[in-house]
Amino acid sequence: MAAKWEEGFQAAVKTGRQGWTVGNNSGKVRLKIRAKDLRTDSANLPFPWAAEAVGDALLLINRVYPLWMQGDVSLKQAIAEVTGTSDKLKPTANRQPPTANKGWPSIVESFRESLQEGRNQILDSTYRDNYEPYFNEALKALRSRSSPADGHELLKQTLKRWAGKPSSRAACCLALRNLMDHAVSRHQMPASWRISQTSIKELRGRPAEKKTKATLTDAEVLRLIEAIDARNNAWGNVFRLMVLFGLRPVELQYLAPRRTEAGDLGLWCSYRKISGPNRCDPRWLLALPLEQPSGEQVSWNLCQAMDAGLLELPVSRDGDLRKLNGRYVLNHLNRQPEWLELKQQYEAKRMWLRPYSFRDGYSVRAHRYGIETAQICRAMGHGLAAHSRAYESATDATTRAAFEAAIGS
Image (tube, rainbow, N blue to C red; front, side, top):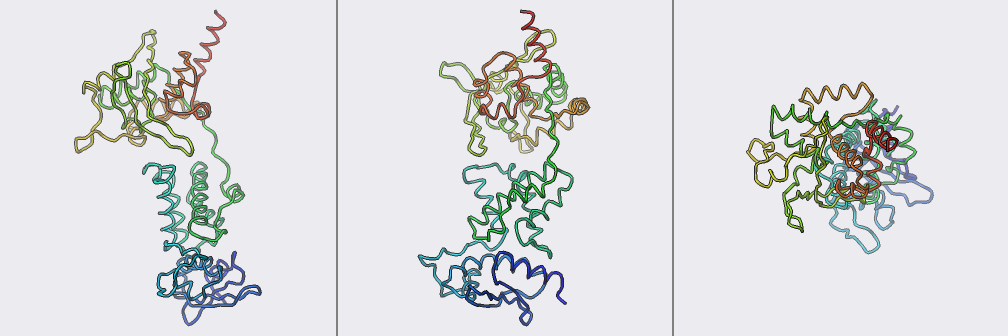
């Protein structure tokens, strides 16, 4: 009676390959092709007939299949060419050369390069947060004894790690679908490895409950910054910059005082955000003052202080300015009791407070000042669609104030 791993191995080889089977040949994996409409062929693979060799054997079979199906090589020759042991075969005009990759890790690395060096050019931190955990888990599944036979099973096994976490499951589905598309289109993996939208709908589970974003009032922001500044002036300046100019945390690395065409001192942001077909071009930053409860405007002279070299900012252990990003900003905020208290207050209202709430606050102030939406988008470095989809333009308080002003006028 065949062991479970043997049954699974044989089923995986047959999936999407008419007449392809494997068996035990004196302790070696023997690949056989016996189909009515195909020429018969067989050859040993360089792997023992053992459960721990199944993953590697399947990877080799996946690469051999498209080469053999083109019809001008034997199975033995195809295996030799794919494993790099052939000294006879040369790519012909009618046959694509075999992939240079030696397995799924190489395909993952190829896809990472396409993400970071191709059109998207995502940051290391973006890859680490949004792709790497899912790919590592998928590679673990592919190396296991119950190695998945196709994209559907791979997604199913990988998603187990994030049971009960809708947002992570959705991100995993997207990452693996794109990886499998890359594997099939660029590395000649069988089409059975593609992950369909049907599979995603079936396996993803319920979507995450949509969160209502919290936007702090000017008074709350000012009290928070005052408390942080009393303990650490450098970090106080970080949040002054984010609030006054509506910055993304990563943009703190890309600021420089410059003279405008009119000769005035301004703050220039050289950051280029790329998201699919959209990109954020370098831009002049424009300050939006906050209001004290008394009505007095607050607009710290940050640009002038930076130009004079007087704006203290966090430094790393080597004495250089710290390369700030969303992770560092969030970690620092999560150590501030005032921030944690605000989070608790807003969570009680089922609202989501995060570092981007400062950027949302900038958007709300801009609309409160009556600035045209197109100009707000240019100042914030995004398009109209992104602005309407992702950013707050009003709060209950500003809406109420606008109606009161309209009725009273």
